[in-house]
Length: 255
Image (cartoon, rainbow, N blue to C red; front, side, top):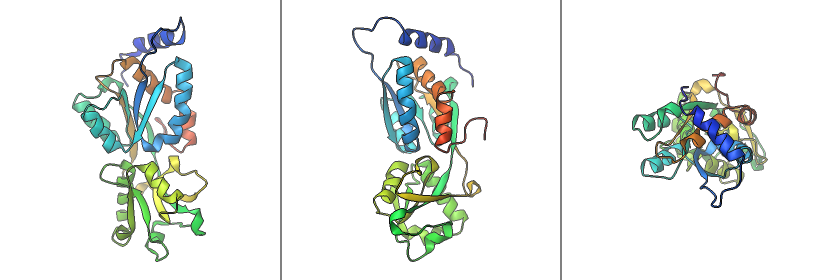
């Protein structure tokens, strides 16, 4: 990745990490991020805030809806998408700075079963059974993990049978909540959010869907692009990578 802003990043680290406090606290860095990052970024953000002495506002949602908000003037400084295509489109439209674009992860989807029902699904074909009445996935119209779920169901040959049972989450975190609350017996969610007490899960063959390559970039209109780039590098650096890996992401250099 070409990083012409690196000297400015170094200055930002020095300026924010030392010296007397300013009279007026600067505005927070606003990060728009795909909902599959909810647990990982909630660990990474406090470490970044402590390291640089800044505040971060984290806005989570489906990638498609966040991209639409950005196009309509949403106050983001950095965008973390669950599908690199959204970042590439916004770079082409000169909304995001192309020189800051970076891959940060590849995601995985899993087949999840609510533990409250007392049994566990092991393959996608199990979703067609009569004991499964509701299947939760993220909305494929704007959520990359929902699109991957639909692709997997189609390739497994069970889309037509499962489609009448589908309930759509606005994003992958909302989809998980259907399972946690018992509103759906089963579903397909991101591995990065699947390790919660209320569900069991098994991996879905990644060959059943297009790769979930996830990318990020800094907003062109951000007043502090060097700080946004510092956050991207923090996520992709020695502080962020172990956390991302622990939540099941493949990391740049691994895919």
